[in-house]
Amino acid sequence: MGLQVFRKTSRIGHSAQTVYDWHARPGAFQRLAPPWDSVQLIEHTGGIEDGARAVLELRVGPVPVTWVAEHRDNVPGRQFTDVQVEGPFARWEHAHRFEPIEAEACLLEDRIEYALPLEAVHSLISRGFVEARLQRGFDFRHRVTRRDLGMHAGIGLEPGQRFAVSGASGLLGSTLTEVLATGGHHAWSLARTGSASRVPLASAGSISWDPRKGSIDAAALEGTDYVVHLAGASIADGRWSEERRSLIRESRVQGTRLIAETLAALDRPPRALICASATGWYGDRGDERLDESSRPGEGFLPEVCRDWEAAADPAREAGIRVVHLRFGMILWPDGGALERMLMPFLAGAGGRMGSGDQFWTWVSLDDAVAAVMHAAARQDLEGPVNVVAPEPIRNRDFTAALGSVLQRPTLVPAPAPALRLALGAMADELLLASARVYPKRLEATGFPFRDPELEPALRHMLGRTERK
Image: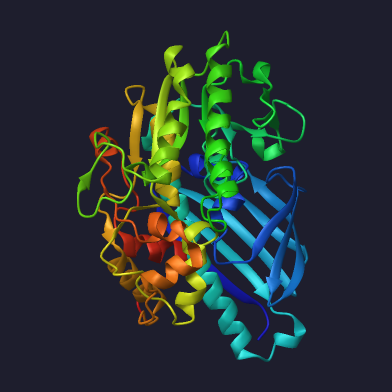
């Protein structure tokens, strides 16, 4: 079988230098890694210059395998190559090339020369598996490159903006910092451990804070352009005991109040405080059309959201622009609600929840990140902003779309009584509640959704873009 060659090319509507620079920045590896691949970046010394190395861990079945790649043949603005020095292949050389084809467009080419290990040389199954995995993965990589570069070009942020992000280890926060870094911005993590060094997040920089103790390094926040507050205990980790309810509420209210009061006292406050909130604000409202002008609902989550948003008042009263991003269910296969759904659906045990008539509000992870950056860039945007896809969808239709993408039946419903027995009040407020929420203010300010429809969004993030 010997040496094999894989090649993927795409026209990208940006200059070769722009596309090269995007690949060279911290966060590019994480953005390009398909979420269905079990590959983690363990260490990265240097950027993509000759001699720099990346240490990866991937899983072949249950077995972790170390993969060490060295960067070579770097021609700034045109190419670089990754060469395996340790790993699962007998040989692996991956050339990234950026060829200008006009002033603001280039040809992105990924060319891989590889040889399978000796034990797989005579296995056509192994070769076919590798080729299929490469095709699926690089289709995803090229889509992400095109989508992210388009988002950065259109979002309107000035170059080199400085962000401080709480909750940066979570799904949304970690992805936000990666996207900011690839766009040439700088992000620091508000973290309970580590020094308060002013180093970009990709270099493990952090600003110390501890909301439970009421402490924060205010000096490190001076001159920051934007503060993005995403931290808060998960609402989906276990039944809502009284202790859990208290943690959910206080983790949001205490942290928000501490940040708001701190920013209000700064000599050089940020341009905006962008706070997470949730469509839980609206409660269970049936088929009622809801937007940012709608009254709050009733129940535990609406109460939490009201207190959460009110905790930012000190910053608002100090003249800082405050935006409350009311997120719907954020979809990504490597974290959050969708990750929990995948196993039963892949096993053919998926189905509607309760009656299936309830409206679910959702947003892709990419659009959630872009909405944060849009809120920063739009100086005329403040107050509540619904971060949801343009059209809410009933649970039964969500179920059908996911089953279609995964090519699995969806005939195993989860009856409401069973959900209540397993989850208690959380079932009624998270899974069975109906909130038909629309992104009126995002649309009014020209936000360009990358994932306005559910099934194409699922196909992109799951790497299942073609029906078979």
